Image 1 (cartoon, helix red, strand yellow):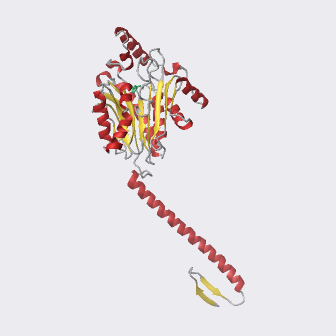
Image 2: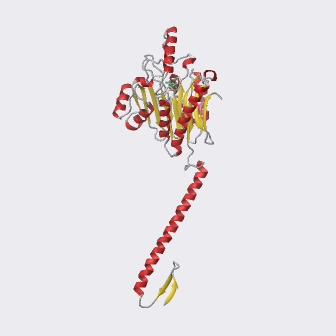
Image 3: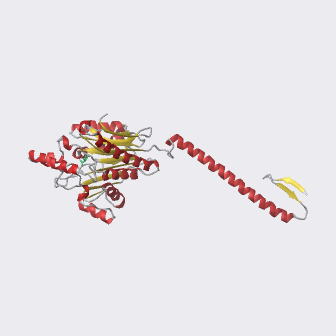
Length: 383
Ligand code: ASP
C-alpha cells in the first residue's frame, strides 16, 4: 500500500488489486471536497460584499443604501399669513397635514422610490386635504365653479405634463403625470383633458366634491369687493386685497437616490378668476421646472407675474448660464426680479446635490423639509 497526500490534503491510499474501486471513491470524495471549498469561498466573497455594502451605507447614507443624497421639500402656498390671523388649532392642522405629506414623500425616497413618485404622492395628499387651494378645497371662479391646474416635470428626461381648467378631476397632479407619460403632448386643457382622463380610467368627481365653506365665503367676499370696485378686470385676475392673498397652492420638489430631480405644482388658481384664466402652476417654466443639471422648482404666488418672468425656468437658467448656486439664483428671482414688477409669492427649490432654497416675498409661506439631521421641519411665517 502506498500512502501519500494530494493537493487537497486528502490522504491517498493505493492498494494493489483494488485500483478501480479506489479511484472511483477517491474522485467522489475529491468532488465533494471541491464543492465544499467552492461553497466556502463563495460564502467568503458574499461576506466581503456585505461588509463593503454596509460600510458604503454607513459612509454615504446615514444607514441608507445610497450613493446620492436624497431630499424633499414641499409647499402649501404663500401669501398674507400672519400669526395674528392664525389660531393654534388651525396652525396644528396645517402642520400635521404638511408633516404627513412630507414624511410619506420622504419614505418613498428612503425606500429607493423615484422623485416623480414622491412628488405625485405628496401632492395627492395635499390635494385631498380641504386646507389647501388644490383639489378639494380649491377656490371658486367668478361663476362659482372650481377649475384646477397642475403640472409635473421629470428632471432626468425633461419630460413634462400639465392640465389646466379641469373641473372634475379629483387629483389633477396624477392626470398631469398621465399626460406626460401616456400622451404625445405636454399640456391638455378643459374638456379635452377630461376626455383624455376618461379614456385612461381616471376618477372623475362632481363639482360639489371640491366645495368647502371657507372658500365659498372667500368667493362671496371677493364678489362683494368687486361690486364696490365696479369690476375692474385687473383686480379680478390679480387681487390686491390682502384677505385674498392667501394662495394655498401646493407643490413638491424632490431628489431621489438615483440623483434624479422632479417638481410638481397643483392649484385651484385665484379666487374669482374668470374668462378661463390660467395661472403659472401648470405652465412649465413658470410655476414648475426640473432639470437634473440644475434644479427643481415649484412656485406659488400671483401667477400672472410668475408667467411674465418664467420664474421656475429663470432660476434654472441662471444656474446653468452663470454658475451661481441655487440659493443665489432663487433669491435673485424671488426677492429682486419679482418685486420689481409687483409679483408676490415664493418658490421651493432643490439642486442635484440636495441643497434647498425656499425664498418668498410675502409674510408667510407654508413649507416643510427634512433637515440635514433627518428631522422634519415645518415653517409657516418669516423667520
Ligand atoms: N400661482 C397660483 C395661480 O396664480 C396661485 C397660488 O399660487 O396661490 O394660479
